[in-house]
Image (cartoon, rainbow, N blue to C red; front, top):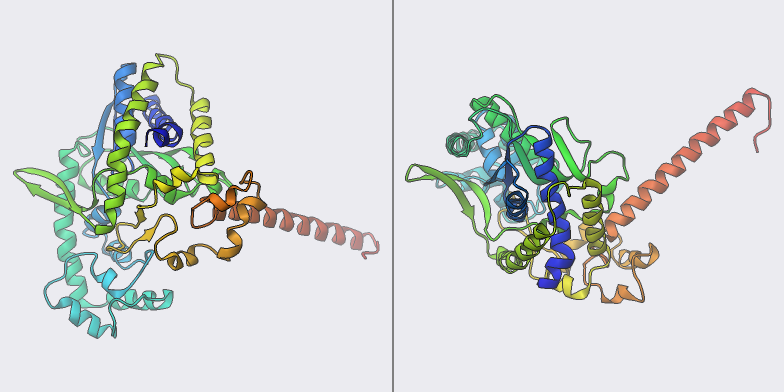
Length: 426
């Protein structure tokens, strides 16, 4: 684990943590909240750097998830809450959808019966999911359960956000891995309606779409179809930016204080163990790095290059021992209700096929695109041959398609010009 921390985790996470802190300070923001769970290690690193450099910025770990925040938001915007709770996830069944908030005893069975669902655990196709969501939007018993759950979630979420200072006025920052910025939007809406005078500014590792005015991205911002995010493996990064605690399903009050309501799942144990074992070596790397720098050492371009270099190598050409460390990790989201996929091959690899087109061919892509050296393809254990193979393929194919389209448009324009001049077009 020490080798993994020094070769992958430290050069990937330290630059982002420092960048988020310095970027917030440059905007006059004096409070930065690192969102769970991806912000756990970046916060630990930022605290070390802040102490070393004497930076005046408040750093806080904020518990939250889409499930906890959008449940609260449903109290203010029922349509948005309904869309979130009935959304498709990696695996969608009627049981998964109905398990996203607590329903009254007997309600589940009656809703399934009215919805025409014979097997609650059977996977729903995209069309079936859409029809079931439409049914739920008009089912009185389901909506009553949603409203009751949303009211309680809203009270607890605002209590927690107020307790942590997000409703005390003044602008604050949110640090998270990113991708879409959905948690920032939810927090902004909740705090905006709860009394805060300004919404959060997001500081992300990357965004899969153009960054909104109130967000900044460290590695890629979604600009253009073949941006830096095209070669970035989101699942791998989220496995790296982990925390030694379970997902958050909501908030609860205990002794006058609000705290997270954890949602432990059996499949998380491998990930939790990985996080616990990584923490010590990673903190040691961060302390050693902090000891080597001083005031004026911040260089954003150099930090970005360091993180990109470490992550690109890991995504594309992981050493076997680096990959094996991740073998016990299973990937899920906070709306999957216990369903998970293995991060790397070894457990139900058939479930990964929908994530990889032409799976057998994709195994050969690292060699085709020059991402293997000396026969390394046979040694890689990622399910796609190389951890970034599908992303690399997507980037290359998108780029080739755009070039082909541009050439076709240019050829057509040239042909029209020739016709206009009476020329011959072969």
